[in-house]
Image 1 (spheres, one colour):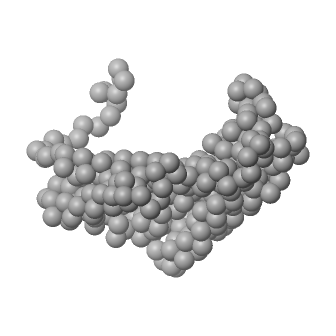
Image 2 (cartoon, rainbow, N blue to C red):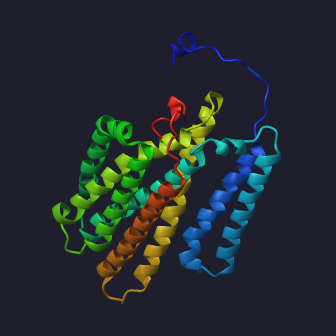
Length: 295
């Protein structure tokens, strides 16, 4: 920070305005939608409080889009989505986080509440995933993207992540072990994340002008967080519903049934991501600019 003023090139200053209305509307919209989903299990999906909360969030989001379309200096200029693969990349990030974040959440709960791991032991059990992701992303993913392209790696990553979730949904019994029931599926999920995350981010940044790089990066991060919040809220509701439907007296069995349902539907989100990537991510045409060559 001390050296940066002398090292960074000076930019030009210009007058501008902050899109406070857009920021307020989109934040309120996302809060209402996530809150409505989270509380739906308690209030009921058909209750007026649930419906009006989600509908209000949707209406606020529509108003946000209208503001972005008419404002001279919007928070998110909608024209940026015309860039090749940028919108598809953001969709990929939404579905990727929608499959990946519930894996961490419910795997922690399975190990601590069903297998009776301590919080420390549960954290240690996640280290192989973390190390595998770090090593793969640093040394392998880039080479695979250079050889096979963004689209192929993204699709294979989604499929691996979805397969991991299906393993968790069908092979995590109450008397399971780390070596047999957690480690193999968790490494497969980590492989899927390692293959998919960088290509999804590359797609979400592709085609943006240099002056729009910050906006594209912000959109990519926001898409990932939105996918995480909404998907986790939905999976928690699904797990709670599955738990409530189990016979009374077997609390561990009910917990595990809820976790299995959440794992299964998170896997479906990952498989949906693979299908969307297949349909929406555009491969480069011969002679396109080198900036899109890896696409």
